[in-house]
Length: 185
Image (cartoon, rainbow, N blue to C red; front, side, top):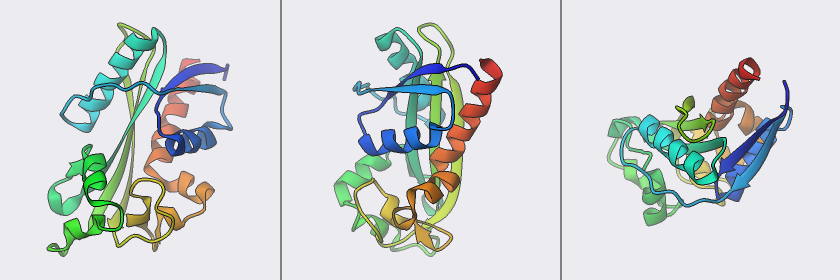
């Protein structure tokens, strides 16, 4: 695979580090740009493709954008793409209380990457999902809702980074992106 330069649009240093670690064995040259883009309200896929189009226009080149969601099955997949605002309002220590009145604590971590070659190009979407459940926070609380999302007995926050990257929603979405890039380059 020939090297592929990508502008990863994020201001989140934890997200950047995770994506760099997952893509490190590939020929992708990742450059990070923190661009504040207005987000469309809609489905996960609509939000991601709209963000990719806007970012490609801003940088006048290829971009990779990402949207992470946390979907509670008891809430019919909400908070979904709006999880950031729920987490900011409640904090990671109180987040699990959203499901206090429900027997079903299951959830899906969803990561959607959208790649756009540049202005006027149609974005490609790559999505990964990991099933888990919402629990009281355990482990470090410095990366979003990782401390509240449990997969097979451990929260994301309790897992070694390499282990998390193999099974996470983000790792699964990036694996699809890498496979597509191999076909394209």
